[in-house]
Image 1 (cartoon, one colour):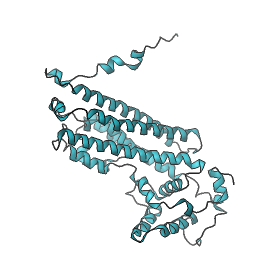
Image 2: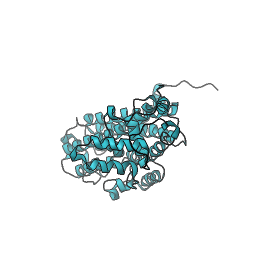
Image 3: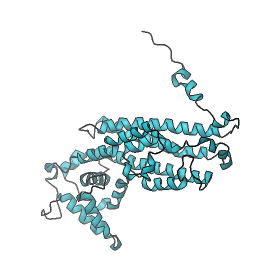
Image 4: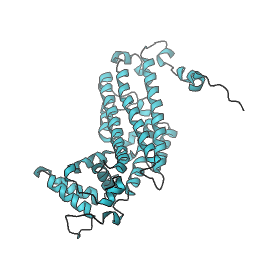
Length: 346
């Protein structure tokens, strides 16, 4: 069969896209000029959310595998696509500046016509949060979170939460990182401590070195590092084994085999930071536009958004691990066999 020629506007579905802006103000013969901007900016956001969900889904498929070769294409593909998500979220933050060209009076020309519609009803943004791993119990005003959605959309969120989230898949992958399970890699490791502890000699040494790096006022951090690295806590999203893997990757990221895992972890922090920045810009914009008035969807407006900003961090446990870093020149020297496996033949 011969394939028909592709025509630009048909391929992009421009007839649908460019005719998808129906102004509520025009329906009542009270044309509000800035409503067109308002619609297009939110349609653009939803298109970008679709792309982010698409990229995240492909990365989750990679991490759903029982085994991932950290030095194979899958890991490189995952890192590349997470970085693409980061770039999209950077653009999402920048787009707030465009909608801020609309003044409060411009917004009031059509705002009341939108009720009870609200950005809070963005099913795609809720899908993104749930897929990343934001659980219902962790949400700000969780009873309100699904209340403004159609029943079928609320069920979609509940269904996603029943499946493994991205943060859970990352935890499972980190737990499989093998370096401390292969005793032969540590044959030549010179531990400064006796072998009486049930912890791996490396981690015994590391905790002692960390203790020496602390100021007097930081004594509580010694207790915290032991809890985070060695004690199971159901309230934490990452297990002690996964936390040790993250910290090891952060500490020895200069080895070639750990570069991709480090970039992946760093991308998760970028995603959290950009989502937080986007929420902050949204809070500032809402305060500028409507002050302390309630949102069109019935929320408390600025106050709700500020609560979500402070609570909806997904990968905060990774950023907390930076508390436990020590200087490069004080790091325990890795044994020759492990260095070779990480990429440096010595």
